[in-house]
Structures are given as structure tokens and as C-alpha cells.
Image (cartoon, rainbow, N blue to C red; front, side, top):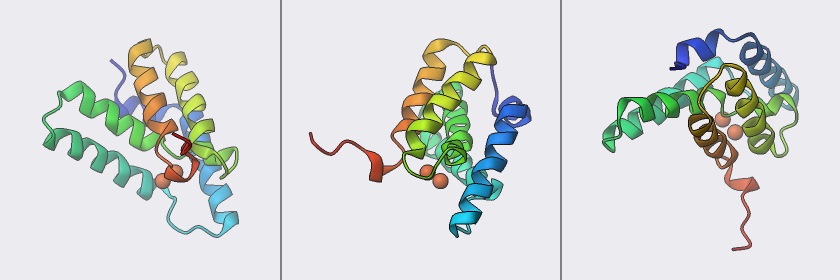
Length: 120
Ligand SMILES: [Fe+2]
Ligand SMILES: [Fe+2]
């Protein structure tokens, strides 16, 4: 099973995390560093733990938290959507099962309230 530690060591993840950081620094954001995504990963895991989820779901939440902002490497606009697709493909290349990588894709794709479909 793919763990957060393995995801952190992936070269593509590393490049995208750095790319996202560069993009956001250029736009004047100060708190989109590795520190930010690590805090989000930990909090996502803590929330699921408090809600009584199983260990694997907790780990998937942590992975989603760590990857949630990689889409910023493409563009701040719609970064939740681009990041979701990027994460899906990276996790596929790491041979994460399709059900798990789809859950992570959905979580990342919906993390930005500003880009949600509000027509419903
Ligand atoms: Fe974020
Ligand atoms: Fe974000």
C-alpha cells in the first residue's frame, strides 16, 4: 500500500510541490510552503481519526492533504482541478489502486470552495 512517506519521496511530487511554491511566491502568497501542506496532511488525518475512520482512510486523507495544492504549479486559478488530475496520474504511476486514487482525486478536486460548482 502506498504511504505518505513514499508519496513524499516521489520525484514528480517533489517537482510539483516546488513548482507550486514558486508560483505562489511570485503571486505574493506567503504560506504555501512544505510547512503548509504538512500541516494540512496532519490535520486531515487527525480529523478522520477523531471521526473514527480506519487507518487506511486516515493515510489516504494525509496523502490528499499533502498533495492538495500541487495544481498551483499549473495556475492558481482552478488549482484544485488541475491538482486533482495531476495527483490521480502520479498515484496511478505509483500503482495505487484505482478506488483509492479516485478518492484522493475527489478530495483534492473539491478542496477549494471558490472553484466549486454553486449552481445546484
Ligand atoms: Fe492549501
Ligand atoms: Fe488550495
